Length: 412
Image 1: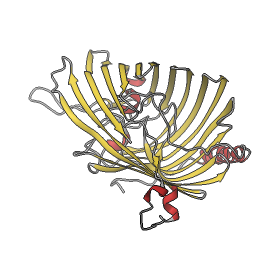
Image 2: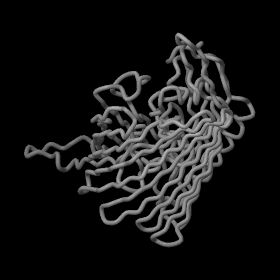
Image 3: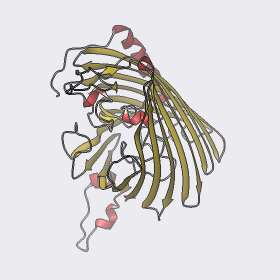
């Protein structure tokens, strides 16, 4: 438990909507067809699973262990629990080449990971440990951490309850990139937290259907990839608490080659900051279209409430000629993400653009990430991305990052 926590509680008027939403999802899930697959499986990107220096590699599918192959010549029979075990893993090697910024180039093992999944009747267990030779962020407790670790129980066809550390499901899950977007560096994407999740999927194999999520996180997971000071979790003594998310994600397949997906999300959380506890509300809408080898997506998020103390204007220490200045934060923010990709054989061309507008301080950031990925066999992807990330403020325009990023993503 992190130091500096103060007692806080969810406003009473939020409890009833959350409980009603959770009950509705459970009732809907119980009406799903028996042959429908359970919800809550690992999210899969539209193309090769590649990921970002601010982000993580997109979750990769585990591979089942064949217990029959473990039978030795002496007739050893593996235990029953091994039949429900699947194992996967991988690693991302990242080469960073700055362009006209004065930074130095670098080669880094972004992380290596294992994916462990067990299924024992209606009970499931998912664990993903990740490893590095240094801390991914300064606020991480160490170079080894649990990205996700949760138990799940199938309570009805297509419906599961999870307990533990898992990804929050507010807004579009990911944009298929490695480097990422403004949203992920502010802690809005790829964010695993501690709590409970009720997830359901209605008619997942039909022409139309619905995925829905009701999540409550007691406290943040402290291992997203936000940059220092841009999310509550990196502020000493601060944390996100009582994070409540409702999301509905309908989809429609007019033909075998086309899928249209929409999404609406609502969120409440409390930012337990050194300056006091702040109530934060977020609303989002997103949509994606996939037609054969082409895909298009867009995501909008509005935030009302303060989650940090000194961003987008950082505090400045005193110098010989100037006095120290306090940092400033914006409580009214707008985020937009859009992207598209086209795959031809083993080559995928992709373009993402994202922006964050910090309305209270009239500051905005824009990030452009064109990319080309090549799948080398089924277990290795080579991805090149160009990043142009700028900040626009009334006084000046600055370059946050301009670089070429090459990643090798291998998995089994």
